[in-house]
Image (cartoon, rainbow, N blue to C red; front, side, top):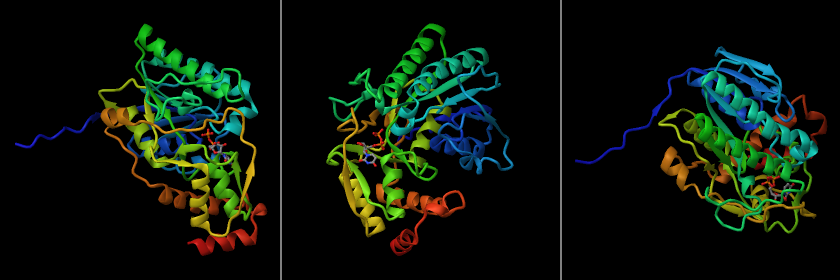
Length: 342
Ligand code: UDP
């Protein structure tokens, strides 16, 4: 008789608190919880998130938005807390490094305290940046990383590492129900076109008819995961039973150089030029997740290929940049280019 694997059971819908609900990934995860029948309270300081991302959540579902900071004491009834609250694009997190570090560490400690009071499971989004500029490739979860503790990226990298330390100690010493995801480069609709990340920069620049800015020689690599894939993995880590502790890498192992990414954008959009600019300090040279653990524990693998995901993102950013919020900076030349790429 053929053996079949029973699908994992999932937590029944209850009350979720999503920190960072107006952010790029957080807003999609909020929508996912609402669609599944959860009642959601979302909190966001709007430091890097935006109200425009909350439009979808403002439907008939039970959603409450709190504009606020996870650095402040929170008293929200919840069965499940998901922490996505932290600026994640390098220019954004470096623009206020003290705030980034505090949000990562003290903010997470605050959510641990809340989970302790309510008995909620706490799912935390950590990052591939805990591996720093890795000497081991691809990166597995048991690699301890290579981070410069005093460099310009440290506020984020070390902040996220310290948060993981606090979460794992809370699990070991207080029995806190924790799940930790390490998210690799994610892209897709609802990215902020001005967050300074490579995908948002290249697509925005292509749409505005500006040259794509390649830092260094463009030989550094990243592995880009489409947002619906990342959100599906976070959803499973949040609600699947039995629950997993992690850390679990979430990313797409399809590794490419930044120059190859620029060439792909060029193929999609057409007439674009490239310019080369200095490589930022401590920029990781290679990055690619080993996702064996995600496959085993979450039965998950990414599905959306890069070209398809970039094309959806391009359409989103095209609409956004043409909207009232941004239209003043949109050139007719760019609009023509995108129309011909479709
Ligand atoms: N990058 C680039 N041009 C840009 C923005 C970024 O060449 O306009 C490079 C950056 O130096 C890095 C990679 O693209 O090597 C990814 O950068 P991003 O800021 O998206 O994320 P990171 O993975 O560094 O956190």
